[in-house]
Length: 243
Image (tube, rainbow, N blue to C red; front, side, top):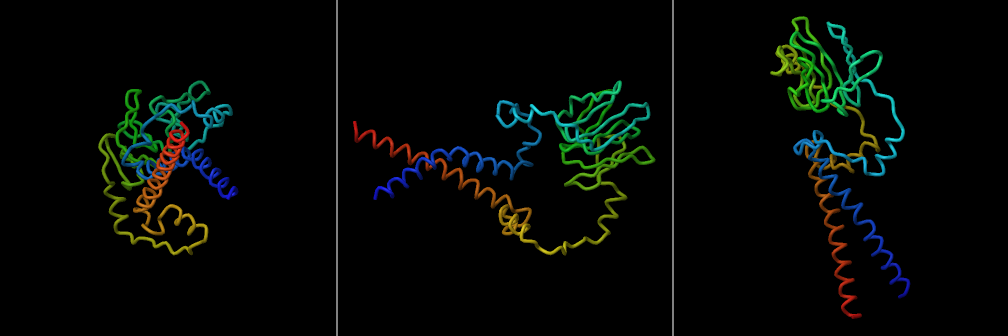
């Protein structure tokens, strides 16, 4: 009987201590599943007060270069995982508008310079960078006619002649539609199956895995909150009986 009471006590206190981590994991899983619709990738926050980020700031890491461009007037631009940089006197100077945003591709059209970033297509004109289109851009290339082609994760190949209006490229889009799709015939591995079971893709597919994540996240949040509430009620009753 004493062993049972001791185990129950350990279980209760462990639940209270782990309630906050479980609540954070459950809530953050839901936000991750809906990051596109909520636009969390475009919202900047100050999180340096968290211990994990303070430790990472202590060790400076080299830039992870992704793309480079030398413009017609000799300006050298570097796209990196950490943002966009301009070379000046042998040093890389960060472009404030794209600070901290991964830049994967750079191109120069007849209308100006273009940066393909994780949060969209950016256009530089008269020394200022402005977002021309939202999305996840992967690469950028200049054509002989001065237009620029950008590859977007969810929009395919887009092209523009002015840098502001981006539409499906007429040549590449037509060719992609005419090309038969490639089936994924790779054998299923145990590691892939475990990952798909974890994310819910094995049950709802890639487009519906958010359902599984929401269910698990809500369940974790519910268990954490109700566990704390039940402990609080028990402590309240205990205090009332001893008073």
